[in-house]
Length: 363
Image (cartoon, rainbow, N blue to C red):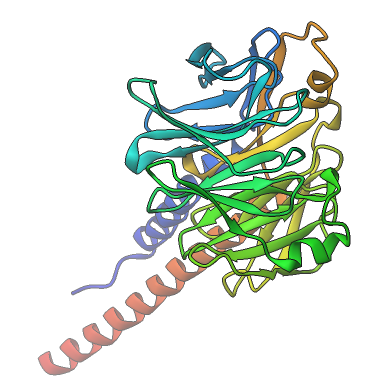
């Protein structure tokens, strides 16, 4: 087999380089996706991504509705449940894709005793499957929800420092009441010191955020035992957490910033590897992982909605992009180019040796 002539060799190198650059290029070059949408008096606190329908589902603080928001910002009332108590709000949302369900935390802010429940809705028919009352005291405040691979839902209590569990048939119990939750705050009954964001990790545990202390807990999804996640800093003010398929996590604070975290040991320890600026004037309280593992925050003006209807109609969903991750991807591109070039040189050397052996045999 003859060696490639110099011009053809150069052409192969250029072709390989172009292909490698064109592969990841659009990911790094595209603009962050921003969705502005209008819905009078919505004031959403949380949202979820429905991968089947390819839209966001957004709960309302001031209405008993859940809206669907398309990629283009088109809003549709997806769930309207007038059977819920007056003044009920939809807080945490989670899509249970294998069972085609939407799980929604229901809470009443302005009435005592508070009403705390988890509602499940069929994503196709949009009918309610169950409304499960959560065993609680007057001050308890159901907040966020995550769902595991079996369909069990886990709901945080932002006042009582414990986690409820709701099975697929709607049976609700107090699941995890670890002393670590209250030890972190030194005050077990202050409504501002409870658990907030929660996410399920496929390896069988939950990551739970405590806003006032910035602590993150790793909670066993079977027995409810909890341990601290050792971090390089406390993330005080963190409100919500979302986990990507690669195991990394995003956390958002409505008063500070967004943090991107990684762990190399299944969240025994973790590090903050990037911080992203957010618009605190719009009070972002929720973060989700959407299509193609992109991270989005919800600008719901929730603080404004808690004080009353100010007549606001406009809200937003914004993709958050990390320069640090873009830099890391660039490193991988050049590494792939280098590996491709090294492989080519190795192949050329092998072909040269083969040609020499053949010439030797012929002579």
